[in-house]
Amino acid sequence: MRIFEEKQRFRQWWVILILTATAVGVLVNLYYETEGFTIIESNFSLIFAAIIIAIVIVGFFMLELRTKIDPIGITATFHPISFFSKHYNWSQIDKVYVRKYAPLTEYGGWGIRGLGEAKAYNVAGNYGIQIVTKKKKRFLIGTQRPQDAEQVLKRYTEKISL
Image 1: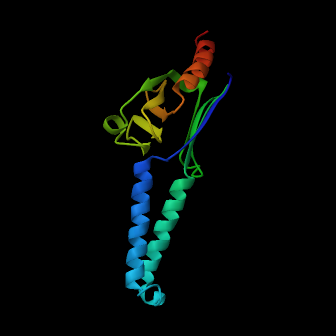
Image 2: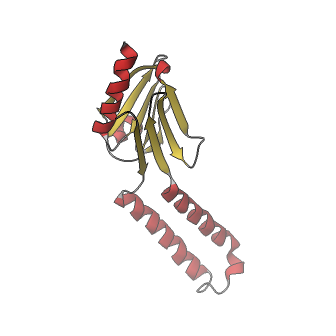
Image 3: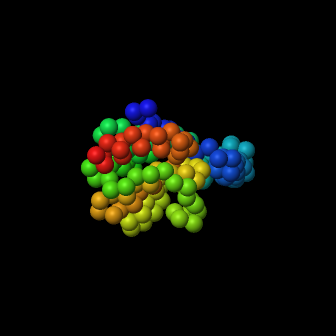
């Protein structure tokens, strides 16, 4: 295997439960405040809030962590928000390896995490691709396929060390 590509989405049951409960709560409140959706124009702020929450929920379900390891380097992007994209060329990397980690205690959960020298992009699980740059910055990319990632990393790190 020469290239590793992985796409992950937030699909944990508890996340779906929270989003569903939020949507139901807003809709029930909107229903009662507009007397069964009959006087909608009188509650513009509530309708606006419902639209914003709907956009956030749809956006959340569209969010996808894309990871790629290839001859150029390692890239992680939260698609479709290209602002949250990290790329490391092999020449920038001092060490890279797959490791087990504790998302809550090390990074405060899942998503775009971390401050200072240690950052992480993760969606679920507790395995990640740990990158340590030559400038000693640390970046972790969560993976659901640690064995496949490790196999591809081994191929490129052996070439780098020669």
